[in-house]
Image 1 (cartoon, one colour):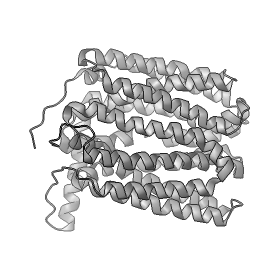
Image 2 (cartoon, one colour):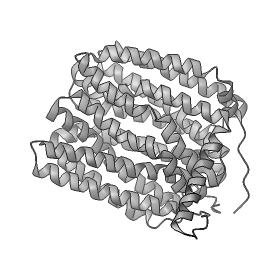
Image 3 (cartoon, one colour):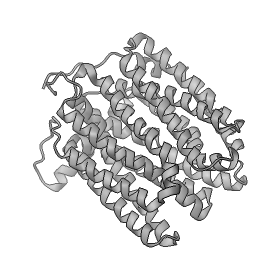
Length: 423
């Protein structure tokens, strides 16, 4: 384990710095991508489809990616992931610049690059989450998670607050280029990081390596299956995400067609969510919740957060929508940091990558379907966004309340951290 007692030691600072810059570029890319596609095609179905494409790799490859994060150098996975993403997003920027009218070729390339970035990110995410406990002091892990997620929300706040404005002023190609360059900067910063990690032996034939890889992947699945609390957590997140995701997928249509405001308000509302989440991260990282009270606090937070979703169906004032989204962000931030920290501390280090890879697959299993259906249903209902928001909000609340009655999940949330031998 990392011997330093400082949170912002050299390794964590370099990792944080690279992620801050690349996440800032990613937010600009997300805003530009959604409004460029909306303005070029006017299709909610395409909007849902591209978001579905962005989620499919995590669902399909999550367990494999988690095993890779445990068997291979997490440092190399992190660096090369950012390099690959940077190269392909820069290529997309150049093509969209050359084909400014939004031809079929540019749209097809946007889908391809989205798939590549999502696939690489599927391997990147469990490597990052599994590495953090090894580069920060154990007693500062919750704070480190809070800082990491806070930086993501700060970049969301900045990037999306100005993303709509920059899209109108600069256009999609330049925002795509900024995103690509930010990935390359992140890779350069990460190249100087040292991540302690004990790797398994790599000897034998390719067949032997494949069998070991398969064995480790199955071991991760068996580990999760033997812990009912983990199963309950995965099922809960999967179904709640399914009904909550349309809120984000259809938000550009909600902003322009229901709230009747310009594209920059999309950025303000999403930035409000980010700013609220930032507050929630700060609370989760600074307040020590005793295990005995963690279950009641987190499940109450989940239910309260779900209560706010149906309200968007009746809101017609952009400022009220901004307030609702900000408060939801605060609750969501507190909930997510607490869950991530609980999973990190309850999972042995050699199994951590597989658990977070599996988490991506199982919690997001229905999300691509939700994204695809959100756009299709919106078009079939003549883009009646308030009706869709009402249905999804009520269903989310029902699943959140049902979750509170899961004894296995309550037990998981109350458990003490596992102890690991010093390295």
